Length: 95
Image (cartoon, rainbow, N blue to C red; front, side):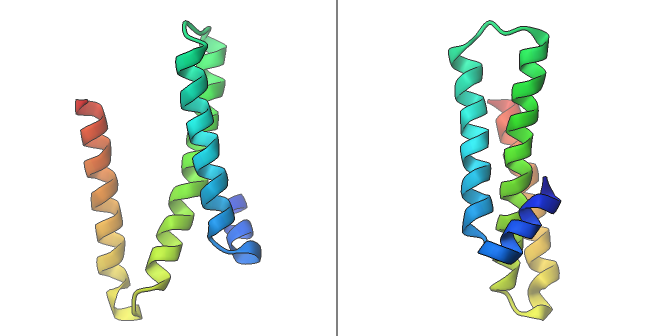
């Protein structure tokens, strides 16, 4: 999904892949809750939709954020994005 999001980002800007990614992820989460209990196949398909949306959204957010930084600060910006991603994953697992 990152390759598709990258092409969209280059042609249309960061807004479109971010919005598509958020909509895909939220749709998947809502369907998982509304349609529960689900079959194994349904869980897999909704999980693919969720992470497809995540893949579109996160790469575009990271690219858009790093563009605003100076070239000398790209390493620090990348480290901050990765650290926030790890903390978010840990918080989600804990909750």
